Length: 487
Image (cartoon, rainbow, N blue to C red; front, side, top):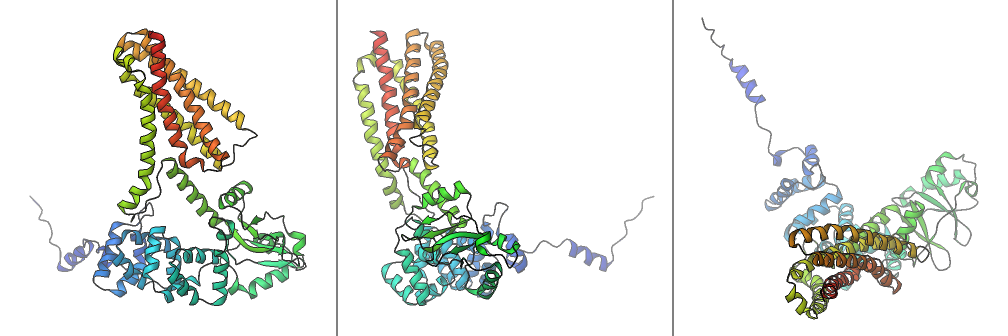
């Protein structure tokens, strides 16, 4: 006897239908869920979210567009700009309040920033810059065309305008350009209680981010610093001079790479910036240094490859102009390298296997030289190599090159003998590998050292010289040794 399945009541069917309803589409998600939908697990913007912004802009749905933008952090809005066309960027700019717009502009890549600055009205841009620290504001103003720069500065309050103009008076990539004018300073005779009361009273005028209170003498020269964490722990009656720590000063003319090195070496969170007379003129905080380290690292990596940065909107012509000169230089050095082969044409005809084996020797030498070059450039950048230890480092790299050459020679020699059954050919290739690997190590360490000595950036053109050296020596060593052994 079979049992009949009971029928669901109409109420049960309705309840079951509710449980099986599909999830609402992304476009209909409530505002509180948008932030979670915007970013993937890797904190990159989801393509679907970008499409939502584009769709809202196409429909002129101001409320939805504001809702979508308000759910994003300013850094994510800056990232969003990179995925939009110029037309949609202008739509987004209109719905950003001045503080968010300022943060977005300061986060943008250089090529995008110029476009966004051009599309932003001068009055709106001036208002937005007022909410930035002086260093960030000056960085933005520096990217403006002369006419628009004058309009923006004229629309700003006098104090903010003077701070930006004084910052722009310093050379690019110096501490003066990197620093923010806003600092917290206190005289030596103040107590902890007076300093705390001052911070509470002047809270609206304090820097947005600061870690230390700089103790200054009557001539406004820093004599020490009191970390805020120490200030809050100390008794109110203690004098600042009693609890202050020694301070590491940075001169306004110092190169930003030197500043980054000092921060890294002494584990600084902030540092006071002084002018030529030793007076306190600003401060640099660790968030600025993180940006410098990232920029310098990117520049060195690109320079080693002989290219410049190509942003998401970079044109084909700009990219070609940045890369073609280095390729032409490579063409010239390659022609010189091959000219060495012409001297031994008879030897190649007599022993045709050399034409097959020469590129291997040259390629291995090039890779070995690149390894040494990368280590040397990094050591110079981190100031781990100087005249004091250069001899030891050079000796170490040459030893490594010789050992690697011997190991490669043993493997390559055995392989050549197994394939061609010619002992002299195997010996030729083995000796050439040892010579070329040793020369590669020598060039990889000496090229950046020589460029550094001449005041040049060792990352920019070292790879060209090392490639030329290993190509030329690789071909030449194989052919010369083959001529000597087969004569």
